[in-house]
Length: 112
Image 1 (tube, rainbow, N blue to C red):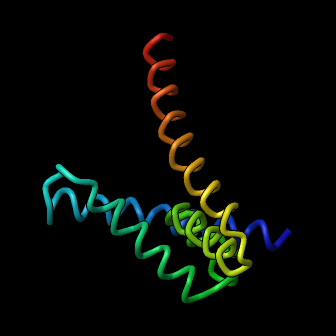
Image 2 (cartoon, rainbow, N blue to C red):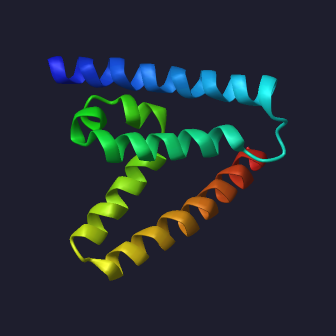
Image 3 (tube, rainbow, N blue to C red):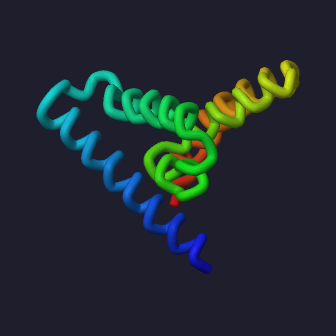
């Protein structure tokens, strides 16, 4: 469908822009002892998804640019719905299990 094509194009554009920002920042602006590019992209993406609303997120651009913005948007949705317990659980589980899954993936990758 047309919607899938828009998501594909938007996601690819967002991913390419993220890659360009990472190259630009880490090769020309700041050395890599802190992930400034990822940090910058995550904050910019979060701002854009908050500013632009569903149109930008639905076309795939922000999702391709950074999924952190979607994580932030989902968290804000829980807060706005006054689901405070779910917000805390979602945030802690996403970060904690996400980090654990990354470590586990690295361990499994070394074993193979």
